[in-house]
Amino acid sequence: MQKLKPALFFCLIIFCSTAFKTGSNEKIQWLKMDEVSIKVKEQTKPVLIDLYTDWCYWCKEMDKKTYTNSKVIAYINEHFYSAKVNAETKDNVSWKEKIYKYNSKYQVNDFALFLSYGRASFPTTVIIADDQSAPIPIAGYLEPKELEPILKYFGEGAYKTMNFPQFEKTFKSSW
Picture 1 (tube, rainbow, N blue to C red):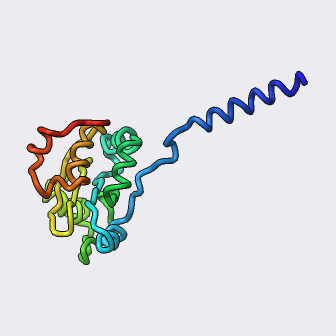
Picture 2 (cartoon, helix red, strand yellow):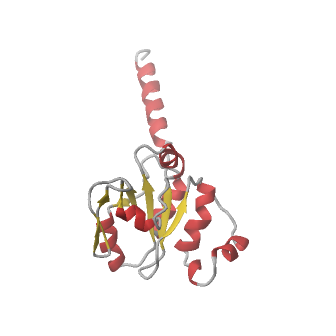
Picture 3 (tube, rainbow, N blue to C red):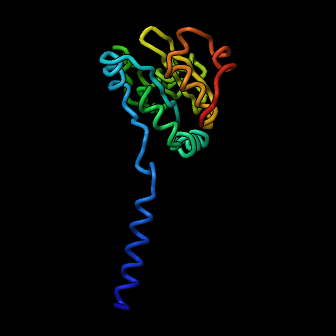
């Protein structure tokens, strides 16, 4: 019986540590741009694009701190189609039946230039509200509390009836 107690105690610790982990497996459902193109035709939702580079410190911080926040994850997965796009990819990027190629002059993909109106900086969160909308680039690192009003403005469709400053005046943060 004495030998069983340490084994039972060890099993109890393992069980408790795994049972109380919440959200550890939750992740944003990042899609490829060609997948997003197909999905928006099937069901309309805003698109969120994380425009990043491999060398960007703040991009990595946003991945660690913002895109791992359980409320950010749940909200993006429910209300957006989301994609991560490496601005420096040499692969072709397909969006709305157009192919964007790597631009050796600027050392980024033309899709990054399209999304940022030629002012690529990293990270940039890009929102495409609907099929008729132009990209809306929001440059810089965003904490979850800074991203919340942006996500909710587009995710709840407020952009259809008011401008963002009006929305911000009445917005109540819940994160």
